Length: 120
Image 1 (cartoon, rainbow, N blue to C red):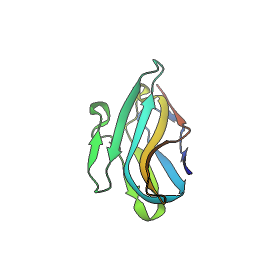
Image 2 (cartoon, rainbow, N blue to C red; image 1 turned 45 degrees about the vertical axis):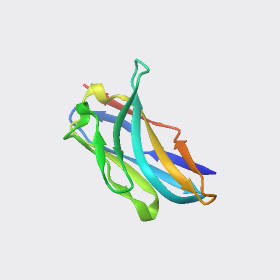
Image 3 (cartoon, rainbow, N blue to C red; image 1 turned 45 degrees about the horizontal axis):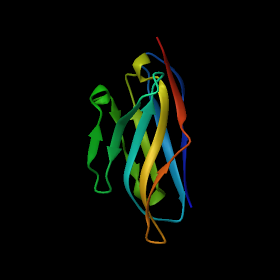
Image 4 (cartoon, one colour; image 1 turned 180 degrees about the vertical axis):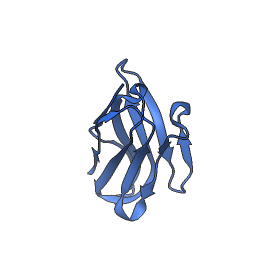
């Protein structure tokens, strides 16, 4: 069993910053790709950012130059550092990871989500 727990969401004003955290625990051998997705009020899922085990990052166009996705492999932690936030960033953010378990199985795991609200 592998669990992801997100934290760090909340209410922030236009132009503000937030850092989301994703803590992975359980029968983890290694974590390959870590990613953050978001669901907007229109219920569409969008890949916000991802980082591979080798450190290669990918960002959605709307967040380039505003968001970064660092990771701490030793702690099985992923982060989403968000700055210059706008109301368009308001969404539920979910952590997603590709995990190699101690039973030598690759699984995809989702967190429970954390809500980010940006006020005008």
